[in-house]
Length: 212
View (cartoon, rainbow, N blue to C red):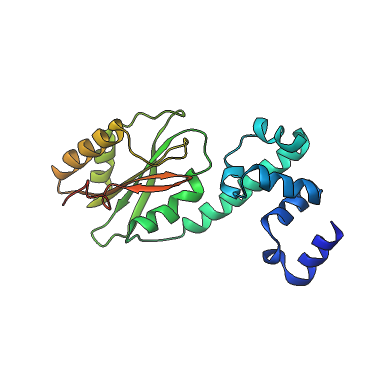
């Protein structure tokens, strides 16, 4: 552990590997290495574990599991705050960058809408639904109503898949069609519906499922 601390002090925390950073959190270099191996070398996979699962990994125990969960949550909040400072969006990658820190580690689905001006400046980000592991219920009428109240001319729908795969369900496709149709009645464009998961994202616009 002393070697890791010395490395941080002399070269900065950015010089440490993921396993070394974990070692500092749990207070054990070998345990940090073992945790990373248990997660296949993926911090995203580690971040997706709840405390009950974490405490069982490599005999981590409750106190260390709580510490790891707290550090992961702090990192997620810092990334979400940084991404939230963005004032406009141009591509699906921009949307992913804005919402991935907020959504990718959740064990439940959340659906958000980004309301935009004609120049793609963000007017408001709003959570419109929070559900379970399998899905969430979204009222497309409330989404369009809020767009009208904000005088938004464009909007982007975003939600996560806790399962880890971003492939859209039949319900996702149906919701996209309903929102696009309802918004078009008021000359409001649905620019994209982005599904975010640990394994990547799915953009309805990129896949040609949204047409203007």
